[in-house]
Image (tube, rainbow, N blue to C red; front, side):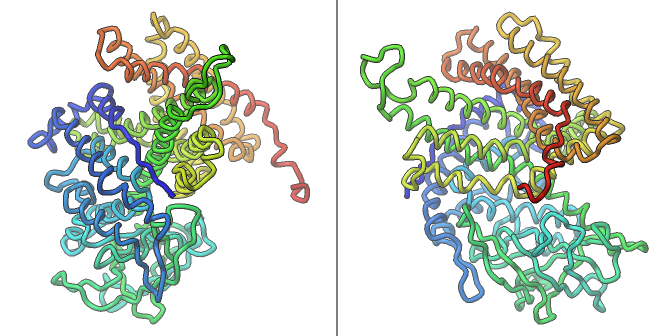
Length: 604
């Protein structure tokens, strides 16, 4: 079985230095003393080199050895230990999640680094990200004592963290969870009892301790999601002086046998089997109405995790695409259709292979554009000093988050199927890397709230935020961009297509708002398709922004002609071949076919 990590950082350099205003982010007060735009290339080059030389060699072990559950404990491949330690000790890991940490990177840089690590070994990346993610939640909502006790070693990668939400049989229906927390004589300490499943990184031997954040209902709290609180539950109890004490009655029942990401342990955890599991309340106890703070606290991490999940799909699919390009340039098969008596040629010269490759290239670049636009907004929200910038970024990220999570994870899967098709029969074998990437990528459409949940968040919530003004402002940015370029000398055709798609989408909104009143079952029937075309419209606009920059570079005679020409053709292909799906889907939704609702269950 062969993994082959092929990656480039050229698109990230373009995004940060030429498309987005990277100078603005690096010039913010938080970063201006130790980072500048001149540092970008070095950081991206070094992190890509690290991912290639340190992380990528562990990928095969993750898939062949995997996480192993034996005698109540979980171990990961030995090679994971060396790479995990290197990443954390050299500043490429959890320390960058500390918004106040010395030398930490802004998201537009940190997430580029993370993309290489995920691509190099997607099964290892959750262990790296969870340390900082969970520490950030504690830092945001914990007391000074809790922050001092738990977060330093988590940001250092010495202790791990998990978010424990899902319960057996519960799935995404968080409000029905049964895990309880019973008060003790100490108002901050509760006795936790319950079972959680599908816990990423729930047990392993990479770190000396694992700090679980457990969503549970304090005894007597309100039913449903409003009665939930978060509790800090260390695997090994942490004494007041920071030393480790005794085991905290957290046991691993088993780990899942998964389609992919086999090196990432997904555990079933039992809390309080012996009645001795102590949890420390994060924030305040439920109020007089029994309402807890757990859901609000959880979303501090969940919203970021949804961005990161779509980004993970991009990383895995990009490796598959890069391998497909490499293979297509080397694989000699067939003769040109316009010269059937000519010599056999590399398959990259065949028209349908080129279509498959450009579909991947254009879609992946659209995904990366919307993802890094989102990370740019997150940097402004966290570190910006202009209230207007911060407010606008907060409003935009509300709309972008479900698009990034759902569209990118759906397309990651579909783009890898195209990569497999380029390899043909070899792509179906485990001797070539794309089969593994197909297995690894599929989880991302399920993680952090299934993609249907994201689509209902878009249509049911984001469309109506602040009486609809948030989404309207976001749409008007695209309308203004398209209208200002409708007579462009080079791209008039592309902007015409985008303009028609925008008009169709605006018609769609009126239609669907009518469905809310007339037949609400039509909304969930069509919501996933609405999210897809929303992302296609947005991706088309973002790629055209990049095309304008790239065309200018070509007009100036820039030496990197292949890259900039590639950006232009990606944008043209996406707009002329994918964006027309917007109007076509709008027509389908307006037809309001209810076959899927009306068909008798017995007919399936």
